[in-house]
Amino acid sequence: MSFTAKVKNEILETMFTKTELLACLSGFVRNNLEKSEKNLFLSNENPHIIQFLQKELQSFLEVPITMEKKEHLNFSKNVLQMLILPQNSTSFLEKIGFEKQCVYLESPPLYLVDGNAEIRAYLKGVFLAKGSVNDPKTSRYHMEILIEKPKEAVFVQKLMNVFGLNAKLLTRDKGYMVYLKEAESISDFLKILGTTKAVLYYEDVRIYRNQKNYTNRLNNCEQANVDKIVETALEQLKDIDIIRKKMGIELLDEKTKEALIYREKYKESSLKELAEIISIETGRTITKSGLSHRFRKIKMLAKKLEENEKS
Image 1 (cartoon, rainbow, N blue to C red):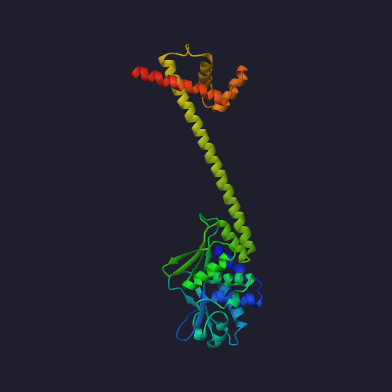
Image 2 (cartoon, helix red, strand yellow):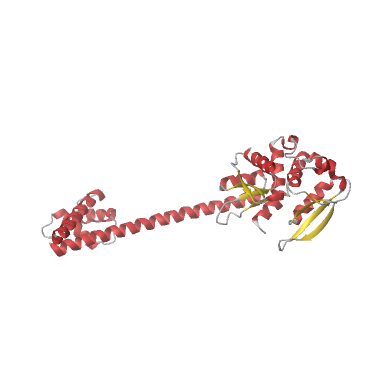
């Protein structure tokens, strides 16, 4: 089962008040209702959503709601579940955001979303109808709701941003996409939907991914430091080799000669480690900065010897 399906199934476990239920049904029906010449119908691939809708809509309608199954035209393996609404559904539909004869209102009546609980319920309905969210184990965080009508898309975006989610809106070929890409915002949206189990799973995976990324960064940083240490040591050994071949080390001052000998002895040590070794073995304290100064003298001498040879 996909993560989206798990989130939607958890939404269906919500205990709604009557006003919240109306808001939820409004969010779903306004973004899912279709009309043919004779019928009004709702459809979804998730049988649990259809069962939920049939049960809750039936409490508002006197005539039984019939259910049908239909094969997808786009070669999907999933069967499309359909609810056929009775002809006398008009009065109920007017309560949740339609005019007479099932004409779609550009925005639902404000009494449906006049409190945070009702706003959450409306967003639950919209998400059940048109929402999807990536499993946090995938490479990117992403939540989207595909909406056909422009003013409804803007309305849903505004409702989401009531909670400071910073939802964005994009135009698509067949409508509009309200979406979130920040991991924290998606987690907050799942909290708004009341999907506690999904939130816990999402946060566990997010923490694991963050820790893994942090560890990788540390490892990369450590490897980069090792590479730099090795590169620096090799350059110093190259300079030392030039001095030995072109003039020898006898004429060097004692401090420079000491740095040269210890570098040859401890080829893979960092400057800090080499300074500590020299301090311990000679009994004379030398800092990393002081040792670095000696190697700068060695480098300058090697460069000068090479230039003299060319000239």
